[in-house]
Length: 415
Image (cartoon, rainbow, N blue to C red; front, side, top):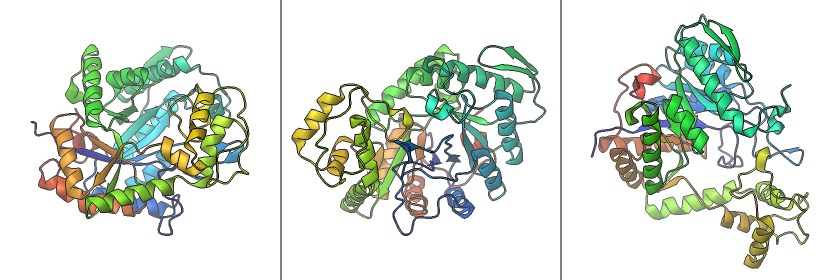
C-alpha cells in the first residue's frame, strides 16, 4: 500500500459518440461560456488539468460531415489562452499534432501558453499519418506510417532544447530548425501511448501518458511494461504519470447507475452512427436503410476496411466477410447490432462510494496514477464528478483537499 494520490483531468474532446448531443440540456459545445463554466467547475473540484482535443479536419462519412462531429471548434492554444485568464490554478493542456505543425512555431506557441498561464500549460502530443487529414495541408500524405513516431521524437527533442534556452541547430529530412526561441516556458508533456511506438515515445519524453487500459489487470500489466521501458531510458516509474481515459456513470444506487449507463450507451448509438459503422464494412452508401431495421440485403463491396477517416473506431481491419456472415445469423437490427459488437469499455459505473473504492485500489497499488475523464453531458457529468465523487475520494485520503501549488508540474508532483 502507498500514499499516492489520484490525479484527475477532463478531456474535452469536441467530437465523438460519447457526447449526448440530442439532450435538451446539453450546453452549446463551441461557445466560450461552456468552456469557462466547465473549467471553473473543474478548478472547484481541484482537478489537475483541462485537456482540449484538437482536430485538423472535420470528420466525414462518404463525403458528408459526420453527425457526431462539430464544426467551428476553435484552435486549442487560442482557446486555452482565453481560459488562462478565467482561472487561477488548473492546468491547460492543448492537443497538438507533430505531423502537421511546424516544429519551431508550435514550440513557441506552447511556450507562450505556459508563459501567459503562469506555468500551467501542457502539450498532448499526437501523430497523424493519413492522407485524408493531409489534404488540408500542402504535405498531403507525405509521411509514411512507420515514420510518424520518428518525426515526433525529433520534434519533441527539438522543442525541449528550445524551452531549455538552447540554440537548436538540427538538420534532417523530418525536422530542420536553426535558432533559439526567445520565450520562456516548460509545458508538461502528455502522450497517448498504447502502441509499441507510442509507449517508447512516452517512456523517452512524456511526463504523463494516456492509455485505454482501465481494466485493473490490464492496467497493472501496462504499468509494468512502461516501467521497463522507462528504465531503458534511465528514468523511474515516478517520473511518469499513467492516466487512462475513462468515462464515469454515477447513481444513488448501483441499479440506478447501471440503468443510466445502458441509457447513455443507447443514446450514444445514433442512427447515423450505426449506419456509418456498417458503411465501413459494406463500403457502400447505406443511408437509405432504416437504422432500426434489418441488416442491408445487399452484398458488401470487395476490399477490406479503411478506418482512416475517423468515422467510428473498428477493432479489426481484415476478415470483414466472415464477420458480416456472423452478424446476419444474429438477426438483429442495425442499431442493435452496433450496440452488440461495440461493448462499453473504459467506463466506471456505480455509486460515488463504489467508484471511489475502486479508484482507491487502483492508485494505492500504482496500477494507475489517475484518470483522464471524458464527459457525456455538459455540464451534468462534470458537476456529478465534482460534487459527488470528489468528496468520496477525499474521504478515502486519495485525493487532495486543496491545491498545494500553482503550476501544472506542481499539481502532478513532477520535477
